[in-house]
Length: 611
Image 1: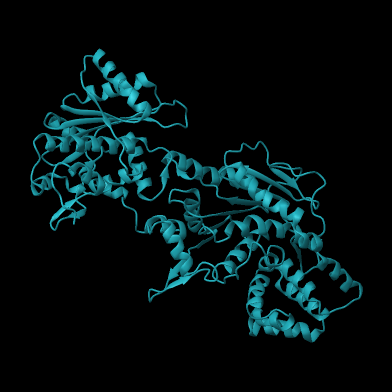
Image 2: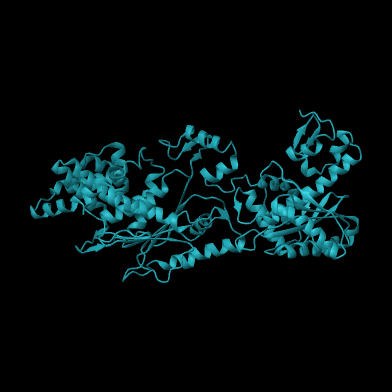
């Protein structure tokens, strides 16, 4: 227990009270000059210290009583007692006094004042809705919410004195830490228990708060009876009740997976938060604080933030900087994250704007999304519209096989396309997307070929690595038994990252050169994956998008090899035959060819001088 409380008892015993004129002066100062002037007048805190303390005092349930306590400690002239009193009512001062290694830079009015006010409102139950706090990495949001706030609750409590003199104890008695994985949540729990065990100043001022029983891996009980528990989103909890107490403070930190699940999985995650998770907490005095940064617009925290805005929750989003009307950057925490800090982070991201907008500006699309749903839907086609034209087109089929049948493993994806030379349009046909063994994989290829047999098969390919290479001769043998003879071509990996290869398709998709079937469920999964990648997020399964890129590359391989067989052509002529989707970067003065992939094809075929 804080020495502040012992001091208060001594004041009562000696009947030491404030002079009436001091109380009147305090209230006049607060009304006329504001809380900061009142704090500066009655305490030793000045300027920035007073401003920060005044903001927290204003946020306490009983600001007048808080200032009265500060006046009492100022009268004694005991600076340390005043600091303890300030820490008792202020998260900022608690952090500065007991966690100086965490808070090495000055606090910011733009970040910490509203952040701590939101945390205090939740901890003192002055809000009846969840609190959502989004901020950039290294802003200290997790330290503030998952370490500082629980420690303050344990060491200082939250007792409110009513006008009648009755004291209500609103101290949170059951704190639940939730993260995407239980080890992550355990880390937050341990950061609190380690401070209770090892922080000498906190132990000196508050006494021994370590419980009699040793801390367990995922639970802990303090000496003053506050229970803490670490769980994950997947943790099955039969009952959250502990005795008569249910969870009354939730600290949800990094509850998002690194990858973006499919649409159904994302909808399920939001439903879990709004129903299952929130129902675990005390309906009368429970508060949940959700903190994190936005990894992508499909994340739980991004969608809960939007939901909170629409339903009047206490939501806050902090970006690294804002831009004023004159175009100047106003940094949210200039004392630590300034222009030089920003430059280092941009350098780490190799100057890529899209990831920076997502990670540090908390803007998941940021105007940098390379593909939108409208870009795709406006080019939808119905299969019946092209069915009669299939004999004039070319059929290409690619398979991206998976070796494992585990539920969480990759899927086997077979993607066929019909290519119309006249319009240079790629019609994506209905794909295959399942967890199947090698025999079923070969059968899926044969079935796709047979289903679209009206379209002449030009090439069938499989990715040329490991298991996939072994699959090729098996597929040829299987097809031969069915009376279908073809050569399965290897599709070699390029130097470019897989997502970079997939992004090459976006221009063709936006221009209507690659089109999808209206109402096809498998195409909706493929489109969802493409949209996820376009926003800089990593999908949980990219098999269909990867197979689509491979089959388009298979078509391009055949086209350029046909050029080579014909003895090559003048570069100006050859370039006019390259699909418009590939024309993006300059070659000479009037010729445009897409980056590495096309340059690999052109190398050795024609003499091109790269300008």
